[in-house]
Image (tube, rainbow, N blue to C red; front, side):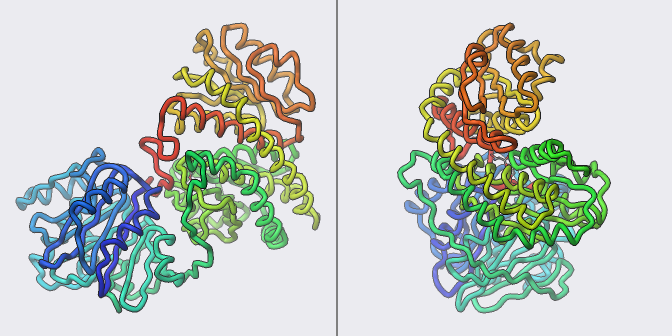
Length: 605
Ligand code: AGP
């Protein structure tokens, strides 16, 4: 999941490339680089391992200028983060520069083919081959058009890619190619620009052109041509970006992650408003389809909202097959879906390749897609038959928090509407969900208690998170947030399952996070806590009771919230998982906003 940009204009665009990359660094921050067609009629390249700020320092020392160029921010797939593996990549003769998002699956074969004609790659990446292939093609076909280059390149490579190409023989031209990875562009008077993410382009125009999968564009400052990968004329999708992309600041918080946790109540209120404004359309969307099966489809934290929804459906006794599927598995182990299937796609970024691939598969089998996404205009937003905004506001921290709370709320909404088809069911849901926002605000206000818990657990590299029923999905989020934010291993588990083997791993003092808000299984949950306490573990108990439970308090560290009823108490406890993970990360000196190895949007399979 890298970010690529390109621009061509009648003026210097080098700073435009850097500005556009700043909007993309959530997509990957292992390294960054730009190349521009410089005054001496060569391509000037600047690239650097590390965050975008390191590239900016390099450019301050060694500036480049040019009227056309490309840029990249990287999340490494092939080849460690290094200056050499950073994009853009250059052909050996310096005539071609490329940036790439995705994976070239046949790159080893292509390297062999290049070596057979004396061309050696200098990086460990898959992407570098693209520059050499184009350069060899231009040597054999001087003056070849951008369309010819696209046709030749796309016949040779396989995999997923969004590619931007700069060439010295046509310096005012940039080429963009989209195959399974997002690419958008704008054309204004005297400037044309390409980006993986619409937010980079809005400064130039809100009239966004979205390349469809399997399309390419060749553009100069005042002209562009869209065609398919065989060279046949085509048209992109026109999107008016009517949303704001205000520069997101920390607003006094130490980290974006902490700021975004603090925004959970207001984000939830915004989702309630979004849901209410779409309530009638949503109910009509459901009513006009003979839905006999529901499949929640997502990845990572977003997938836990699907687990939550499938369990909540059982709480309501919904007489329907409702499951939660992981995006990366769905396409290769597909459950039966047909026109009676509703796919509920949940995604913060709306660009998760695993989810997109799964949804395209499900649509081809006749399923309907309802999406809850946070980024308007994203691929999943546009792929869905109906899309409801999560309305959490921009998330900069890679660990998702406020969007996850809204994802769980979205799951509770759709299950509630499937269970209660009365006209006021959205209003009833909104009223109950409103109390949730207050409960989350109250949890955030008790942050000191959660800091104390973090201080007790942060020294432990391994732990478990247990929950029964609805609380299992919360335990999944606890575990993932500790992993990605604090680099602590934590395994989520159904509490009743723990005694069937995993309990052998209990070491004296090992933290075991126990979520016991689901009233329907409370006694069983308490028994499970007693089992682990008896074996020396350190239970960390998160309860939802009107009064503190002295029996539970006696079993370990205890944090109680006022009972909100199902499923609201479980959703409220997400805020607990986020704050405990955040403070554990601080205590372990991790980069809580940009954890190692991660990216905000995973656009590769
Ligand atoms: C969330 O903290 C994680 N960074 C990650 O699991 C994320 O939820 C997952 O990659 C799905 O992303 P999406 O919501 O943008 O589709």
